[in-house]
Image 1: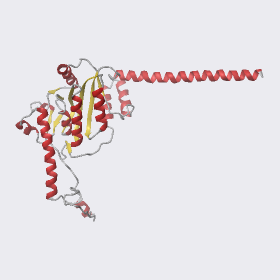
Image 2: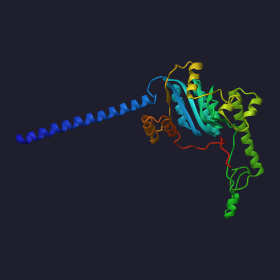
Image 3: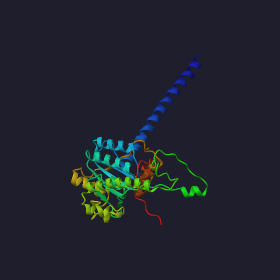
Image 4: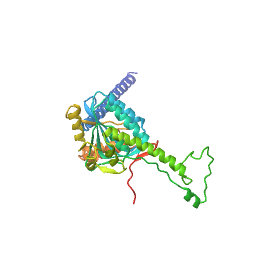
Length: 321
């Protein structure tokens, strides 16, 4: 009986030791992950609670997004945000999405000092985004402008006729569901579409005139639908200054009283995983010293997600030869 008791006691001691080392190992793992996270955050200039300039990146196709709207509300409420840079690299998107983004940025500008930086392209709906800021800094070789709207649709009637397919429709009025794409567009339908395009185009031009303080002659010179380089955009009043993101932040310091030498922190909409392959790859590239590659990978991570068409297009598209 004494031998059995010793065996049982030994097993209990062994279990206690195993439990101790399991808990210790688990706590060490958590501590290691937290240390790595804070080290990476500090390397990227992201330290929770530390005063900083927030960067909100608007990349790619612009569509309505509640997550982006929520993001701007969070930035506006955060006391550690001293100022905001809206970094833009977009050819535009839908008119309703661009209008929503414009209004959200204007609301944010009422709470935080804000500047726009054109990092590559701010065309059409992307330019609507830029003019939501009171000051626009652009790279000399960036693209700005493309003030105009369009509606595009395929006209498949000839193709369908060639393969022997005919689409029938019973409509309440002749202009219902026009354009359909299955029949040639009637003059009446084309006129109705042109009316919508013209009305939205007038809205776009009014926005540019008000935000950029342009005369009718100045507005006429830039609202032809063409794009301009950042350098060309200066005398045309499309941009305020040429430079980099650092120059945009310097304007916040000089004109808006933002404290100097604050880090710039990227803010992302909730739901975008910070552990995406792009982010991990960016972290690895940064650790190896490939800073530009790391930045490109981080920006690529922002473009992952679905978009939804919700109106006419305010979109710049390079002409195909």
